[in-house]
Image (cartoon, rainbow, N blue to C red; front, top):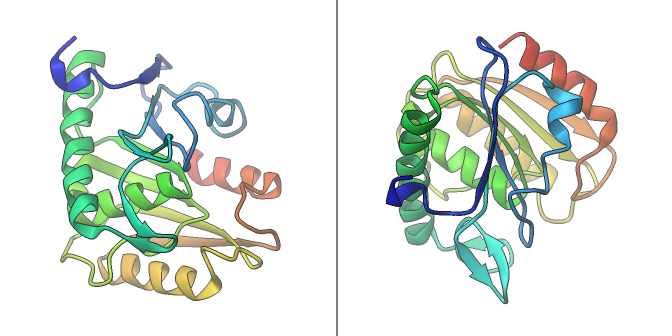
Length: 205
């Protein structure tokens, strides 16, 4: 395995023709946390689940933050590029079509997914952003035409607030993405009631 692939991850092969899923955990999680979503969202899909390389008080994350809700955007850009290089290596190693990943990220994982869409759009075909905040104060210019994105946030989320949701949706649409907003009444969590609709969106991808 090439050096750039030498970070903790899980690869689950799937059916040919199914969009490959890229699973990105939240703060304190790991590459096993979101694997159960495969059965509920796209059981035949190939899956690559990746662990974040940054530690915050011993908890894995995908990029640094200065304090809760305030991202280190220099580190975020560097970690997006690191993830993009990992995905290129994974495509070669596992035989995945370049840039065909659908990212499914929760919280910190959702934020690295949206940042990757905006900074390195060629690496992802689309994304499902669960409990997602706004990654960049000023988003980079990107052409997200043809990319489908679902933003799935809770009305009672104290971190990914309705204001965050509205701005993230606006930023992605301004870049040309086809964005579906899925709200739920809960907080900073994955609401099981949203999963059937997400599965339907993935089937149409």
